[in-house]
Length: 286
Image (tube, rainbow, N blue to C red; front, side):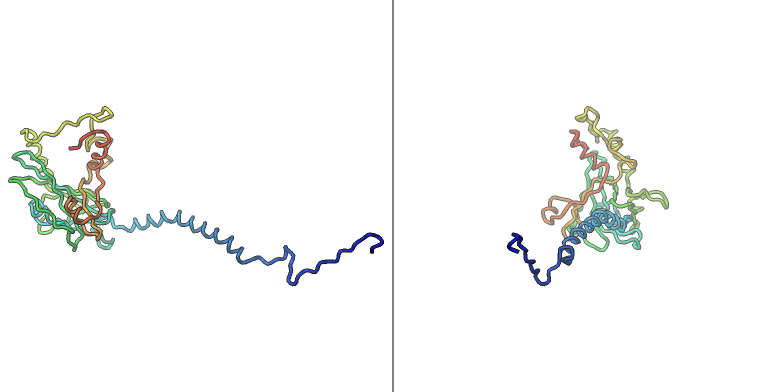
């Protein structure tokens, strides 16, 4: 009514299909936008907490009880150059492979010349049963009257020596007591080697160096030092092997590394730990 100065606003016509905000349909795209981050977060949590379980389960499936087939005449030059064969102690528990760092076995050989007291090192090779070495092992030259000692180590739980052609008797090999092996370690002809070494020391032909003094002012450690050893002191060996890209094994020599490539397989041992500690302490291992 114009006379009263009152203006009546004409109601606006709402477009067809309009719904008030509180009655609008929930967009499926918005639902996806909310759920996707939630699902991804749940997957991430499951991966983080589930991965260690999967890894431990996979590790539990690895057969840690392996055996080495000792070749005939293991203390001879040809026996030293003949690869040992790695097999499962019980095949029902799964195979054993030298390229697997959780199963690999290692051998360290020491040769003393009683005439001079000189000691040289030769490490026989370990390969999987039924395979060939990536490179033919070098046949060592042994001096007349040489006394050979062999020591064995393993990254698995236990390592059992198995004979072939009377090799355990020929090598004077000891794996433990009857029905109870030592575990990861064993040896062949070690008492005779140490007897020859002690005789050479008494004769002045073999002179062990003084321990020396470390940077901390204390004597340099040995494999009997409680700063180095654990409850099974001096176990395992310092031998390295070369694992080629194809999974075969060779002796870790400069020539093989240059020709074959690959990576080094190591045995965890107190003796190898000494070399690392000595380097930090300014000591020289013998």
